Structure formats: C-alpha cells, structure tokens
Amino acid sequence: MEQLSLLDVRNKIAAGDIKTADYVRQVLSRIEKVESTVGSYINIFGDEAIDRAAQIDEKISAGQKPGALAGVPIAIKDNMCTTFGQTTCASKMLENYQSPYNATVVEKLLAADAVIIGKTNMDEFAMGSSTENSSLKKTVNPWNTSRVPGGSSGGSAAAVAAGLCSGSLGSDTGGSIRQPASFCGVVGLKPTYGRVSRYGLVAFGSSLDQIGPVTQTVSDAALLLNVIAGHDEADSTSVEQSDAPIDDYLNKINEPLDGLKIGIVRDSTEGADEDVKRSLNEAVEVYKGLGAEVVEVDMPHLDYAVAAYYVVATAEASSNLARYDGVHYGYRSPNATDYVEVYTRSRAEGFGDEVKRRIMLGTYALSSGYYDAYYLKALKVRNLIRQDFDKTFGQCDCIVTPVAPTTAFPIGQNIEDPLKMYLSDIYTIPANLAGIPGISIQAGLDSNDLPIGLQILAPAFSESKLLRIARMFEKNTQWHKSKPKIPSE
Image (tube, rainbow, N blue to C red; front, side, top):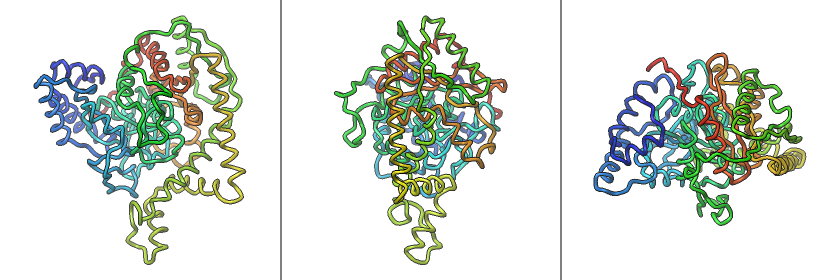
C-alpha cells in the first residue's frame, strides 16, 4: 500500500479519484497486517470507520462539498474523550471508562468529515517519555522494533510512521508530541498554549497540556491545525480569536521567509549524542544556504527548566488525579473492606508506578511548609524562562535545537532510571513552560539508521511563521521521504 500524505488523500477523495471507503479498507488491511508488530492502537473502530467512510462517499456522490478532511483516516490519543469506544488514558484506572461527550477537537474532526479510525496507546495519563508506562499494551518504534517510540504520544507517532493512519492527534505537556515525532521520523507540532481547546482532554498538567497534530509532512500538520485551532467557550484557557487571530496555516505554507534570523542557544547541545549535534549543524547549514542569518543567543535560565517543570507538572498532576478515587471515577478495588480502603486500595491498584511517583512528588511540593520552597519558586523560574524567550525573540525569528539528546533508545534501557528518562525531555520542556509553539521535523538519521528530529521554536501564536520555516527545510531536504521497513510488512 502506497503511503500517501494526509493532504494527498484529502485531495484525491475530494476530487473523486479514490473512494473513501476503499482507502479506509486499505488502511484497516494494513493495520491488520502490521499492528500486531507495532502495537500503536488501544482501540480500533473498523466497522464504524467503514460506515462513516460510506456516508462521506454518498455526500460526495450527491455533489455536496466535503469537509476540510474529506474522509481522511485519523487516529487520536486515548486521553481525548469520545462517546464511541473507551477513553482509557492507557490506565487500569480508566480501562472501562465510557465518556458521555466528545472532546472539542474530536467534534471538529468529525465536522471536517474525518474518519476516526482508532485511539492510540500512550504512557499512562500521559506521564512518560517512552510509552513503556502504558498499563494496557506495548508499543514499539516502527524503525526498529527493539526501540521505544517515545512518549507520551508514542502510539500516535508510531501509527503515522507505520502508515496506519494519515495523521493523528497527540497531547504535549513537556514534549510528548515532539519527542515521539522525532524518534519515529514524523512531524509533530505543539501549538501555543490556548490555541487549541483542551475541553475533553483528560488533564495531566493543566497549565502545560496542549493538543496538536502528528503527521508525515509539515503541510499535513498545517491542514490539521486549520481544523482543530480556535476559541472554545467550553475551555476557559482557550484564547479569543480577537486576541490571537487564526491564519489559514496551509495557504502560505510554501512561501519562504525573507531575511530569516535563526537563533542558536549557546552551549545548547551539551550532553547530546554526536549524531544529534551533527544533524543540528547540518540543518543550520541548510538554512544558511537558503539565505538565513544565524545568531548565537543566551538563555541563562534554561538550565533550570527540567527542575521547574517537574515541580509544576507533578503538582498539577497531584491535583488533577485526586478525583480518581474509586467513588467519583475509575477503578474500584474489589478488596476494600471499608470506605478508607475503597480510596487507598483503588488508587494503589488502579495507578501504575510512574503515576504514583508523580502524585507523591506533587503532593509533597504542595504540602504545608514546602509550597513556598518548591512550587512557588518553580513558578518564579517559569516566569524567568518565559522572559528569556521574549528577549531572545527580539533578536531572531525562531530558535532551533535538537528535540532530544539521543535518538530512540532500547526498550527497557531507562525504565528503571526515572531521572534519565526525565532528562530525555530537556530540550522540549522549555516551550511548555513558556507556552510557545514548537515543531519537530525529521532532519537526519543516526549511525543506527534511526531518525533524528530538529526542533524549531517561535513566539506565541506565530504558528504560521513556524510552519513556513519548517516547510523551508522540508522542501530543500529529502529526510521526510524516509520510511521505516517493518518486519511484518
């Protein structure tokens, strides 16, 4: 089966060159062949997808104009609420949870005539950097099945890389779209905080979480962002369009930026693998060849980003996950003998080790006597990091960095070393603390033929500029055309 881009599929269906139902069946056939190896899906909606595809074909045959996604098969991370299937967050706690409503992004996909083909695996409650923390199944990297796909949106990235959907949605709290996109050799976009509604996204860190697209190409990401971006009255953190107008992100995607200034943070690649450093330097040379000016910048507070993030994120996680107690939501222990044990046993049995670790860290940071020392100080550091970005963007249009210090690491290598796992997000975390947009695009292969991502960061609500900068690189390189060879193909 030829792996067409999301944009190509949409255009061919809208033009009547291919039938939605035929293409969806091809994708489902590929899933049947490859999914047992990759393990990217928790739930696949095969019959429902074919029925919906037939409805879209009827609409087109009747001469009606299809929506912006015109029958394209899309996967969504399983922390976004849907009235169909379960919303599990890859946790025993929510293994059988049926949502009574759809997330706003899901409603927008359906309104655009997308075919939602399944819900993808993830680290439990989006807490992790490898998707090894899923309580429900194992996902591997399509490029090398002994390696992790990244996390927490590993299932979404693996599904796109393996051709098991045309595009997907993930969520990004500290790099959870960009890092797996880098590991799996696809495009991952984290929009500005507030650009996309979080209504119906099961919360991890409410001031950090943001939904975004995972796709094969930059243009595909622009198209998906067109569909999901916008103000939502149901989400108080969603930004009013009058304050931050939404562009047609696809319209000017191929127009290069004249006089582009790229910022490189001094000593930013310290600790990164040599292949990662080489790839970044080669990417910078590509931009120089396109007429960009490169400036070296200082961001003195980035060294504190990981520490600040893991105080803020765990504190918010502790608060958000308090509701899962065996009474209000989620798993209830059959071993409880009184109401105290209902609470304690349900949480002990329902949550995995990493979720418990973060709840305990966050509860400690918020506890009496430690709030000022940890949480309040972390918020102050977060503000300093935001100020660093504001100052730096006064000197350049964007900042380029690696996405991660390494390429995809072997399964099991870091799972017993939480600190090492946390440090895999060292380059992506600052964007979430500052609320700015960032994108990962493939920029090379390492000595083991594993993808290397390039991260581009831009000022808040400048997704249009960010996508154009990313597309400049994509148009002038061939890395995005590289595809994994999956053993079961």
